[in-house]
Amino acid sequence: MAQLVVAALQLPTLGMNATRLEFYLKQAKQRDADVILLGEYVLNHFFKEFATMSPNMVKEQTRKHTELLKNLAEKYDIVFVAPIIITKKDGYHKTIVKITPKTTRYYEQQILLPYAHWNEKKFFANPIKPLKDPMTFNINGFKVMVMAGFELHFDHFWQRVTEKKIDLVLLPTASTFGSHNRWREIIKTKAFLHGCYILRANRLGEYSDNEVKWKFYGDTMLVSPEGEVDMMLEDKESMLIEVIDKREVSEHRKAWGFEKELKEREGLS
Image (cartoon, rainbow, N blue to C red; front, top):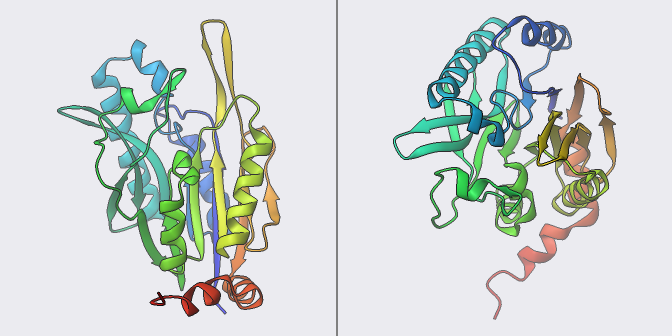
């Protein structure tokens, strides 16, 4: 059965210096990593910090980091998946980029946080329109889906995981406010119910807003199709690297047969 070496970087917002990222890439390459995931607001600052930054600075941060990932993808023959902010005429767009040694693809986040204290929906110019399928791709015999952190909460995306027989979901997040347990339990439950691995990369760092401190706590993790945490980082800068096996996906789906029960009822009225 196919195997895939996955990596997740747990970092705060990166500066413009390439040294730090390359340090981790060398380690990832030594372990034969195939794909590496970064958390939200690592290639760019947290969106609430944009108020103190010029649009040109945000644009330049995106340009430099995109160029850096392209060079590193080619140098180390690796696939990057990372959230990144794109500047368009109508404003900032929150996207996730997939960079391979030869290609670059973007997925524009479809559902953004709409809350008073964290209103990405209002801040970003991502359009509100009928939901589409998330980004999917194949690598080493694995079907992979990329899902933005907040989109985890919506069944539309998980229906696509089942329909497309996805083996691995890549989930970049920027979770804070002591929400560790809620995120862990949701991720474990989704992995079990949909019979897939979930690799979650959560950012580090702090942001202070009206005397409230936002602490991004890490908790980057790999969860198996059995809903078990195979590996988890704590709250320090680090990198997770693990081998995942397609046999685990196949055995879980065969043993529990959730999809089989649904299929038997398709077309019945």
